Length: 327
Image 1 (tube, rainbow, N blue to C red):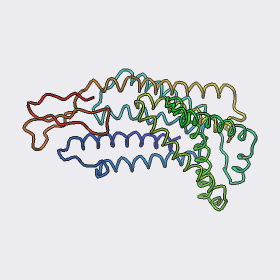
Image 2 (tube, one colour):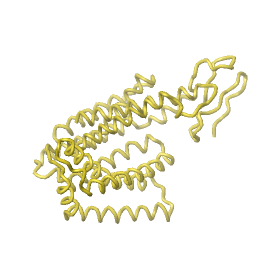
Image 3 (cartoon, helix red, strand yellow):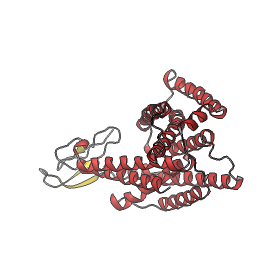
């Protein structure tokens, strides 16, 4: 739990550092690529560190516990942006943060408390289990249907895109936990890295991650982040819980009350994330300018008008010129 929470908190810090780096670059008279910024790279290093923490957490804790803790990055980013980027604290942030914290507490308290050593032989046995085989067949059929509508019918609805991301995420979670579990076991002296199944799961993990990013980027290009983030969080977490419950049988022997309270904690976390991200984009767009301070070569304070429909930062307004309306 500490690994997952710390990893997600580092990710939220890294996102704000990268955003701050982009804002600083926007204020420069001579525009530079973002990858030349040391501040941006420090954010990337923090993000990689956070993802490594998440990866390690899968080796020690059930997937059904680690995946929902991704809400920590959402709530952390919301509150850090208030302190670091001087964004406005809203009542919705406080309410959503409270619900998310309560939901996280319930998740941690009532999550399946099982410890299993993921040996190569155990992973192989799980792979040929009838529960997993049925689940994989249903997922493949569903994914093919969604891919048909996406490619042939040109359906780009957000639910179609994020459902494909979620189906791939279930495969990613299974493979990540297998790789992390066998790595942790090997580090403790019980070598598992010599078994072919380790490298099979490693390849599956990489391929599923690549295609996940592809479809997620497609969704981010077509829809606002305030819509994509909460829906993706709900879909990803749900698919991860189902994958952990079916493949690793993490709810086996769990009391009905514990399962109910765990799911109730998930529901509170989902609701908190939706409240935090709701209307954030609309409130941000009410601020028409980013005040960059004194820009070299200008006679007065220069301002940049963001262009939400392109990747550029906007246009500099000269003294006496009327502000140009962005399409």
